[in-house]
Structures are given as C-alpha cells and as structure tokens.
Amino acid sequence: MSGYKIIDMATVLMGPVTTQIFGDYGADVIKIESPSGDIMRHAGVSKSRGMGSMYLSTGRNKRSLVLDIKRPEGKAALLKLCETGDVFIHNVRPDAMRRAGLHYEAIREVNPRIIYVSLVGFGEGGRYANRPAFDDIIQGVTGIASLALRTGRPEAAYVPWNVADRITGITAAHATLAALLMRTRTGKGQSVEVPMFETVTQMVLGDHMAGMIYVPQHGESGYGRLLTPGRRPYKTLDGYFVATPYTDKQFRAVLAAVGREDEMASNPILVDLQARQQHWPEIYELLAAIMATKTTAEWTDICHRGHVPSTPVSSLEDVVDDPHLRDVGLFVDTQHPTEGTIREMRPTTRWSDADVSIRRHAPTFGEHSVEILREAGFDEAAIAFMVDSGATVDGAPGHRKEPGA
Image 1 (cartoon, helix red, strand yellow):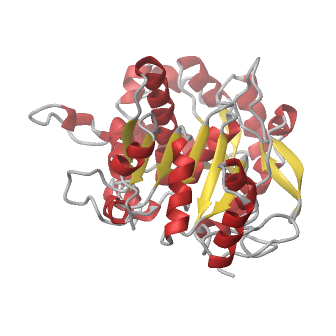
Image 2 (cartoon, rainbow, N blue to C red):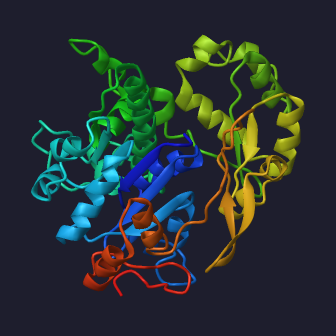
C-alpha cells in the first residue's frame, strides 16, 4: 500500500487494529488524535504516561497528528488532509459525525475519490444504531457470553480477549481494501459501514445457527461438538493437555497407550467417525478419564508418535518463549525513543516481494503534528497559530507533551 494515505480518526481498539494492518502494508497512516489523546494510550502496562502496552502494539507504523476538530482551524486542517487522502476512517457515532460536519457527504465534497469507512457498534437503519458499543457489549448481544451456559458452566462469561474489536477491525481492513480495488476500476470513492453487532453475529452464528438455518426450524441451535461440556483441555497428572484425535488411527493410538485398543471394535460409540460424531459428550468423558492417567510429557510423546493433533496448554509466558515462534522470528526487540527496548510482534504474513514489516515505532502524542501540517501546505505562521490556539500539539522530539497536558 505504499503511496496510499490513510486519515485515521479511529480510537480505542477496533479502528486502530484496522489501520495497523494498513501501516504494516506500507500505507502512510496519519493518526488524528484529540487534545486528550486516544484513550487506548493508557491501556495495559506502561512505563510512561500515554504509552501503554496495548497502544505500543497497535500504534506502530503510524504518525501522530493532534487536531482539535472543535476549533475551526483544526477542522479545516482535517479537511485539508482529506483532499489528498485515500481513506478516511473513524469509529464515532454517525449522529456525532453529522453534528461535527464530518459525515460522508462533507468529506466527499473535498475529495470525491475518498473511501469513507465508518466503524460503528450497530448498523444504521436499525433501532440500536446510535447505541454505544464496546467489546463486552457485543459479546453480550451476539450470544458469545451465553455460550458458557450452553456448555454447562454456572454463569455467562466473556471470552477473555477483545474478540469483537479485533474481528471487526480485521473485517474493516479487508472491506476497505476491496473498496480501494473498486476505485481503481471505477474511479469513484464510496462510503463503507462496518458494524460490530452484525459482523460478530455472522461469525457466531456461522458455527451455531444449526437447526435455525431451516425455515421452519429443524433441530436445535448450536454446534453440538463445540458446546459439549467436556470439550476443554484435559487434566493430566501434572498439568493440562489438548488432544483432538479424529481419525480411527488417531483414536486407536490414544486407546493403545492405556491398553484399551480393543474398545475401538467393542464400544459402539468408537467404531467409526460417524458414530463418534453422535456421541461427543461420552467421547470427551472417556478421553478425560484416559488423559488423567499420565503426565503431560508422556501424552506429548504418545501423541507425537501416534500423529495425534495435540499440545500442552501454554501460559502467556510460555507463548512468548515458544521455540517455534523463535524459529520464525515473530517477536522482535526494537528500540523505542521514549520507552527503551520493547518486544513487538512482526506482521505475521510473509511476502516474496514486498516490505511488510515494522518501519515506525508507535508515535508519542503529537510527534508528527508539525511535520504533517507542513506536508499539507501550512506555512510556519499558520502552524504556530494552531499550536498557540491549542488546535494542535507539537510533540516532536524536544517538544514532547503528554495527552491532555
């Protein structure tokens, strides 16, 4: 995406995930921040104010420009940037963008070719359209939180990572790339809405629509194997282990390890894949009892020799120290100008003829404000006026300020 300019007015996590992908692909991502800064700067662990661990992860390959769009000169500067931008992306509620005069029609007036991407909680046209949405809200309304109850757990529960934000952010990235491809063929820009509720609902029901896919309904909702209470890592003598024997040969290898290989023929729920598909609760119960008889290391060896898909359960610390991830160089130690040495994760895709890499550190607050405004054609007097008025912040090295200061 070298040569593409992304005007990034997205905050928190969903939008920044999208624009991190664009930055990794080589686009010039200009992160527009209000004078109070992106709230995600304060998420996670931090050594200095406004440079939290989650921001250090999603803020790479971007430049930071502070603009107070409530001030006329700040809004004018944003519109000036949009004149030469390829994509304008935000996650502000549509009504607020209309009030600010930054809705699609307003941006299209200054640049008819721009791709205007709105990341919203709920799609326009529905009764929830202007409700606020966060990851927990979407996990609740899409049924994710209720799935724990379907597996026999006593309480509803969230997936303990920002699954809704990240899925929607990735969806927005490929939708935007498709819109840019369309523009190369038609010459026209357009507005693209990416709603969290609808996006995550499609993901959840892709697995769990089941009998509801038929009209009238034919059978229960939910994919039985995923909702079986016993589908969880198995307790071994000294830890936890994941094994997914699927073929007859793999099941036979597991049973043989505890002297029960004959059950493949004698137990009707084990005889073939079709039988096992109808008896997942009993299968998981059987496997749990078998796994409890040996150590994790023993099962690792047994499953490796029997070509059974398996792995010990890793802690977060184990993942960071995983030998495969070391082999492929996923983790890269880089030098951040204010935070020192940080451990980053390179883009996971590999390209034969493209530079998809970490090229810029996560910027400090307003680090590139003056640089970007100069590139946009503002003279020194106009930039100085904007700094003095508070419409922007000069956060370049030697002038560093913290968000809200």
